Length: 359
Image 1 (spheres, helix red, strand yellow):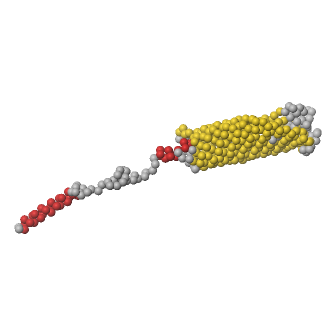
Image 2 (image 1 turned 60 degrees about the horizontal axis):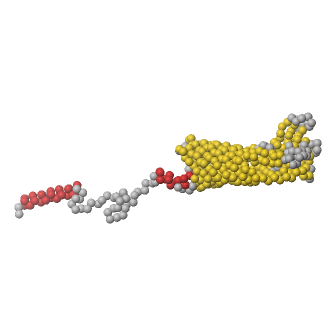
Image 3 (image 1 turned 90 degrees about the vertical axis):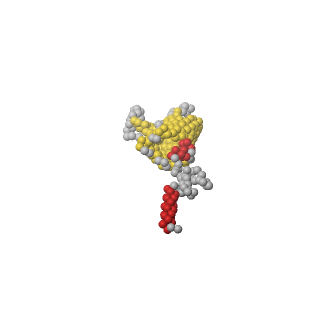
């Protein structure tokens, strides 16, 4: 065979093979070679296998909020209260700058409470959709004492006796107040916009309020010797309450709050009146009065607050008023069958500081 002819055929074959190889690379192995499909992450089944997992990208914000609304969150709080009680019918003597028989020119001598610290603590549970159940207990105790003597050239008169004696040389009075209130509230927070929300509440209130008032007299024309008048009042009862609370966040999580609650408490009063003379040797009066009554109550408060996801801090002014809580007996004259009553409200007001945690 002719050698040049063979070389020409070989060269033609190699050129054809090169073209076929190039076309194979450009055509993606179109000559019977199986193409490997790309990895499918859409969740559809792959050829011959199960569905591929979808990568986790987190819950959408709306889904997170919906999950939080379905959660249960316990919370606790504690209030330090610096309160001062107020009441009328707290006089025990009348001081006059003129002597007996020349008229009376003076002023009433009253007891007066000062500021004392109290404590309010509570716990609650936030239910789904912002409903809450809350239990709180407020406890406050205070006491006071005062002494007065007859002014020079004047006179001092007792105001709590039944006129078994009138003018005295000196008078001493003391009093104390034990104030315990437990509230069970149901409420719900409603958010009107991101900066303002309010809560309405309704529930039950239980109250135990004890008052002690004692006056001690000495001297005078009849030479009184530790003659005393004791007028304690004890009350226990329960009732219903309703209230509302609003928070306006004017600077991020810092805002103003205002709250108010009213109630009616039905309970039993136990009022005592004991009067003794001659250092307790002679009993002038020993009377006990029991009766049922309904007491209206009112609580209000305003102040600054910080509301975070976990912690809450408040500082403000609170006022508590219990109407007609003071109701004690007195026999001002010789007609024992004609008693009168010394009546008054009890109010407490002052600064409150609260710290709370939500879990």
